[in-house]
Image (cartoon, rainbow, N blue to C red; front, side, top):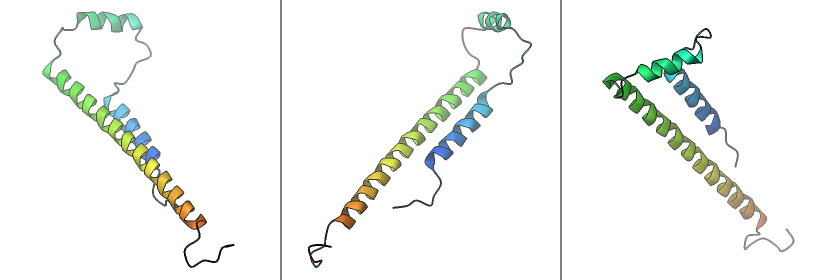
Length: 101
């Protein structure tokens, strides 16, 4: 059983790239790690509503990608079962076939 459709892995790779582009902040090479750690220490303990929304959006998007990965694995398993069943049905003689076929 041949599939003419797109490979689900290509779709998942594209979805992950899009999520990274959406949520990654542009990084500057001139900023040392010390500045980042100091900034994190100065942050409020409670995230702002905007940060909470971004965190929730990212968590939901991540879960959506994981669900798509699960779906792709299930589709691949079903495809393999169908291919095996198709191959087995071609190997078995039918009732009207002579025995040495």
